[in-house]
Structures are given as C-alpha cells and as structure tokens.
Image 1 (cartoon, rainbow, N blue to C red):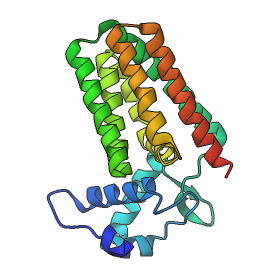
Image 2 (image 1 turned 90 degrees about the vertical axis):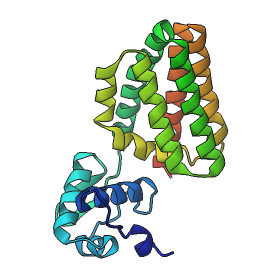
Image 3 (image 1 turned 45 degrees about the vertical axis):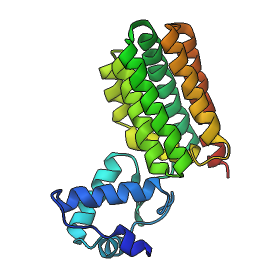
Image 4 (image 1 turned 60 degrees about the vertical axis):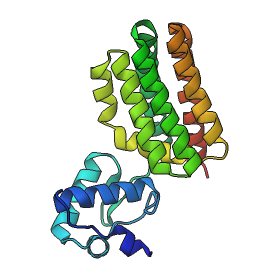
Length: 223
C-alpha cells in the first residue's frame, strides 16, 4: 500500500474535515511528514481525496494545535520545536504531573490504582506490538487516569491544550533505543508509589520520568 492509498479517507459518519484532521495529525505524529516539511495544499488534497477548502481548514486546526506553522513567503510547514519550547513543555509537564502523582498517592482508591495498571499494561502492549500510535493513546489514557485520581481536572485541561505538541515529542522519545523498557519501568515506579500511598516518591518518580523524556527529546533536536 503506498502513502496515497494509506492517507485516503473512507466515507463514514464523521465529517470530511474531522477525518482529514485525524489523518493529517496521525501522519505528523508518525513522522510521515517531518518537522520542516512543506504542506502543499494541492498535494495534500490529492492524497486525502478531499477539497482544498477542507485542507485549509485542517491546516488552520493543526496550526492552533502547534503542529503546523505558517512561514512567510513559504506557506505552512510541519512545526519545528525549538529547544526553548521543548524545555518549557517538559517543565510544565513536570510541575503538573508531579503534583497530580502526589495528590493521587494521597487519595487514590484501589480501583484507581488498578485503572493505572491497566493503562500501563496497554502502554507495554503497544511497545511489544511495535505500534507507536497505541503507545501514544495508552500513555494519554494513563495520564488522564493519573490526573483524575489526583483530583486535578484543571491541570489536566491545561495539558490537553498542548496535547498535540506533547504527543509529537512523545513520538520522538518512544522511538528512542531502549525506551520500550525504560519508559514503562519509570511509569511502573510511579504506580507503585501511588499504590503505597508514598506521595514524596510518587512525585519524585514522576519528575525522574519526565526529566528522562526531556533529555531524549532535546538530544533528538541536536541530531
């Protein structure tokens, strides 16, 4: 199956714009479109089998998510994160996820811990299956559960506002050699600390996990 066949949209109940947005977002997260690649409206419309009007709407959406930037005299390209942007994103994650883990350790019920374990098991299964999109989806579910357990819905909404940018960086880090073992192990430490009710270690384990991911993302930018 070539790239054009893979990108083509099947007509189902969602709108063409929604389907096209999902396809393009996935293509960027899968690095079929790499940072700096030009997004030529005519070519994208042909690949997706939609109108150029739909493509324009999709590009506007992706720009609002931080996945696309408009360069003067060049047009839309896949966004290239600067080291400063990456550092700020991971600093925000460290603060918010650390606070959520601490709170979860103090208040989580057995069913909450079990939900975290199920989400982590899905992360591990995604790695074993070699399916990056499954890893990303399961990781998002893990953090949704963590913030819910910790009673931090406002903090979760803050992170969701930059979720596409976080997942773009995650797509880099999860493909790094050894991350299939190290990432889930670090997340397991978070879950174990929450299960023990150890708030200090839950926050520390989260900080270590985010710091490790940040180092991988920043190293990738230097390649």
